[in-house]
Image 1: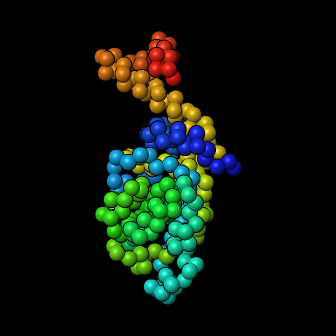
Image 2: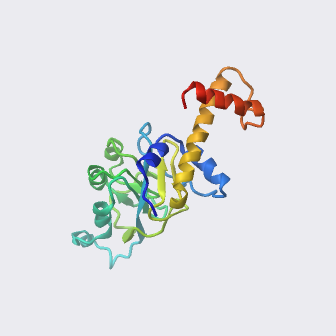
Image 3: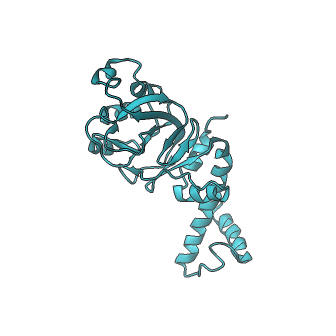
Length: 239
């Protein structure tokens, strides 16, 4: 499988998760929006990258004492150090935000390593500090100070579930102010291309609506004249 190209990355940086959702819906994929996951800080550029995953299971006290963090091979720490530059670390926290998936130190390390962002269907500790970083971060809600009581890190870069969505290593993750979409890796090229065209059309439609046009026949473009006008609009914009 080819990695995400620079051109594809730039296209995904320009489109919304809503547009991606519509595009995937047309392809029969109805469950690609990660549920109950929100940006810690809005107004940042789109988060775009290939998924690198970490899976938590319910913690068992005899196997998950605080001393486990002294192990250099602890999966949480290893994931932070192995997540590739430009990738997004996606964490399966079993939709449980009662204990933290990570904190500001680990998230800062990801940022410094050039990772594109982090997503968990649980929560973060130090959420205020993380929200102040120039780094896209998504979680359910702030968590208790420790992740020892409920979560035990187990697997790195395996298929996971995050917010009721299946995430496979290498899938394309796109996040904006609304939330996070998961795009199957084999569809990335065609989805990027189609979403750019959809975004251009929506820009055209907004101009038409703002000028007083009715949405009937315009959105969706059931009137053939709409399609003609759209092509003329693109020409006028040198697109």
